[in-house]
Length: 310
Ligand code: IPD
Image (tube, rainbow, N blue to C red; front, side, top):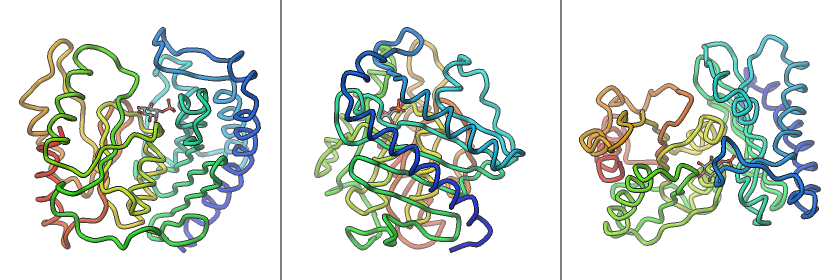
């Protein structure tokens, strides 16, 4: 365990457990959830509950008191400001999703978690993800390893180099963006992936949990078109520390039609995907369990896989 980040990790675990208790109690109080359900920015597929907002306030105030010089980015604070408060600098920045899997939370599915990440110089160095319903606590710090309830990840299967998508189990999500353009891009990608052919496609309804299932070794890859930093920040640290690879790339620019060329080839400036830094809003993400040895080989395989996924 890296002592450099230990105090941050300890605090994140402490606050995740307190938040987990609140989330679990609310999860069991169905009437409270339905009475306090809202939608964000007139998008009936993007849900927010009073519990999301309460937990984020609580976590933010705890972190502000403990680390007064650190910055904070949270899903609900950002949404309340019309996404305007998102300015990521090199300074230590906590990046929080109070409930990842809000739709599951509302419908009573147990795939929900609090996700707490810490970025330093835009790199995720701490990741804590706690699912209080299934009692799964994932923790990681940069160069300190990744763990599920104290056991080193991956826990399910030894990590073997992934050289192709054939016979793999892939996770994806459909997200809250239901514009024609976005639906088409998602379905086209899904078509390519299913016909690869892969063994199967799964959606657990929480980006953080999806990435943790790759880190556990249960699934081979997760991709999603259109995602936010708080969904993936903590899990990026966990997955990388478990031996996996996480890459993101910028969204296509067109407002009406998807830019097919970019969708197929990805963005040239993302080529050095192993060293990629974080950006904030509406990025796409691709996570894979460990690949064949050597960064050069990894880059080649990732680029190959990405060509099929984007
Ligand atoms: C969502 C979940 C979902 C993913 C969406 C996210 P939320 O986060 O992670 O799986 O498809 O893109 O926004 O709204 O439950 O915090």
